Length: 201
Image 1: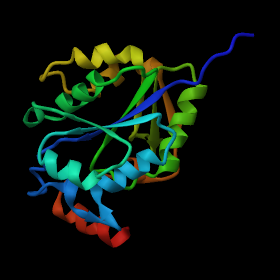
Image 2: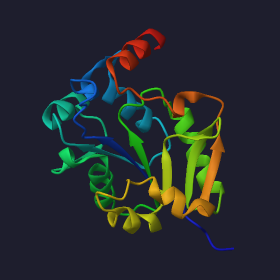
Image 3: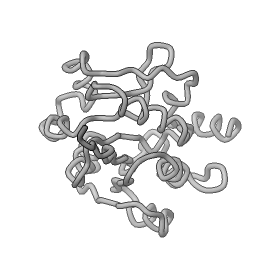
C-alpha cells in the first residue's frame, strides 16, 4: 500500500474590497475583541488550513498593520476596484504547492474554525472537486476547490458573473456539506447588518 500524503490546503481570504455599501472599510470595523478582518483571519488560522493567504487592496497598509505578525501571507490586488473576481484571481495566482484552496469573504465573521473544518474534513473524504456548506438549500462559504479549478478561475472574464458560474458548469462535481447554522450564509454589507451583528456577537 503506497503512502498518500495529506492534501495541502490553502485558505484565501478576499479582503481587498471598497465596502461601498457600508460607506467605510468594513474590514477594519470593530468586532468582538478586535476587528472584522482579524476575526475572520483568526478563525482561518484556527482551522486546518496549511496556509492562509490574505488578498488586500483598499486600505491595504492599514489592514496589514492590523493583522500584525500573524502567520499569514498577504498579496496585493492592484485591480481591486474592478470587483471581487480580481481578488479571487490574485489569491489563486499566489498559490504554490496547494492541492486545494478555499475562498472566504472578509465580511463573514460568523464563520468559525469548526465550520471551516467541517468543510475541509468533508472535502478530504469526498472524491468531488468542490466542497461547500449548505444551509436550507442555500450555498455558503467557505468554498473548497481542487487545484484543477485554478485555471478555470483565472480564465474568467469580468462579464462572467464570477466564480459562482463554475457551480453551474460543474454541478456534478460539488459535494454539499449540510450544516445546521446560517453562519455560513451571513455577511455584513450594510450599516444595519453590522449593527445587528454587534448585538448578536
